[in-house]
Image 1: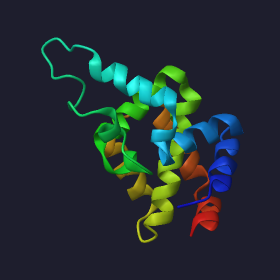
Image 2: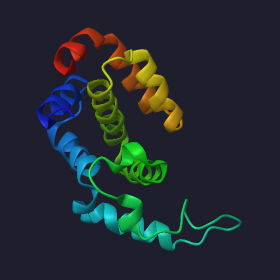
Image 3: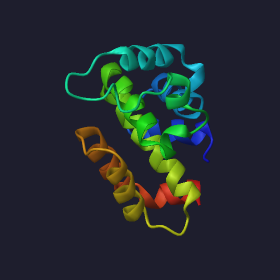
Length: 149
């Protein structure tokens, strides 16, 4: 995966401060180390849901959250991370999408950026932040490819 230096570089180019980028990098790569996120998961897991199952699954937060880059592989972890970041603000959500897109580009060099963006969108719901990041990545695809491939 790209270094945090690369993640921070591209977050900066889209206008996101390094402090926010580093926070989201830690959340994605080491979610179990973000106490605020773990507390959020525990609170969400305890909330009653009328007519629905509790949260998405009824697993302890340590199972939901998982370990390094767990959110890319598990929809439940993605769901919790995005809900958590939405309450922290739009910049946090943008850098979350950007981080995953950059990781995907690095890990799947045979896929086009367009295909990677489609796959990311299929794993999550479309939102304004994702559209902004997709447009940014497409506009900067040559330079991003130089950094990652």
